[in-house]
Image (cartoon, rainbow, N blue to C red; front, side, top):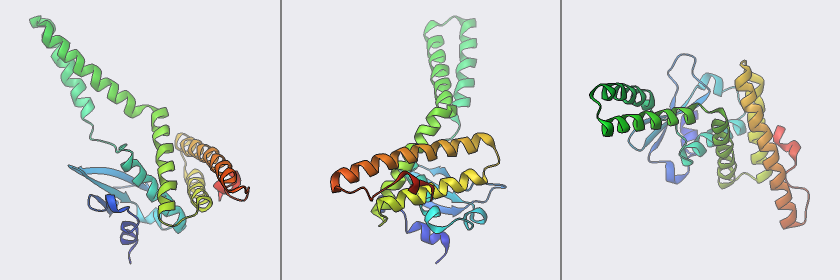
Length: 211
């Protein structure tokens, strides 16, 4: 079985008919990413050259992170915002000449909405929160596919640690470190909940997150 076929088998049933998995074809692609390829169709693209160097458990959790992004509807969309911003600003300037107040307000409204969408897309705090939410989904998916809670945290934590060590750019490395810290805190909460429910302190520990 090829790695792409194996990953296909890790898709939840509700995603199997419209999520596709392909080898990345771009020059110097990211390790794994998403692309919307059509109406209600999404492609997960994997750079197999980098991917093969990771432990299988780490691959699984990084894959489920991307599935989590799909389920959370945080898929990157086509960059229509720049075009809408240009159209809105152009329309606003044009309406200043013809002095049509209603059309001017519509053009300014379009520009404002497109500008807000661009702000959200490029806002680093929102990107981090979306990634943390997808990490939480990845833990849930791992448990659906037979992982214990401690092993799910340990595998994702190990994967993020790998990404920290392999990241040459400081901004990207900090992004992974922030996700790792959030995962550690989540693991502590999970440990406390399991200890409360089972009367045991042998479940998830914060150290587990680091593999």
